[in-house]
Length: 154
Image (cartoon, rainbow, N blue to C red; front, side, top):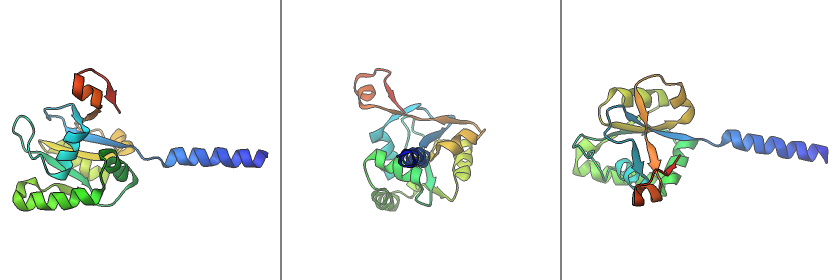
């Protein structure tokens, strides 16, 4: 029985460690601190190409399917393949909506910190280690978006 309880404890510890967290990051000059799920979905699918102030949106993401990236797209409620197909259509209509795809979080962090209007998604651990000028974009919950209250979703 003691061995069984130990195995259960090890399993749950491993499960917690393997749960990937993502962070949405933006250039420090972005006009927004918070975005709704719908706004994020529109940015990463290519539906929205400019910020409210007219600046061009420059989105970036990882080339590989990482666990945190899969979690990000799950949070948006759609599969990553949908976003890529939709972006191809949008880029064919307007080549300026082409995003930047990188092989590492460090490259995304650097790109976003150095590029006006840039937004990206990286692992929480990578974001915590980066010391460049960035802002973390908070995801607004439905109640925040609808009634303007300060209830945030992390």
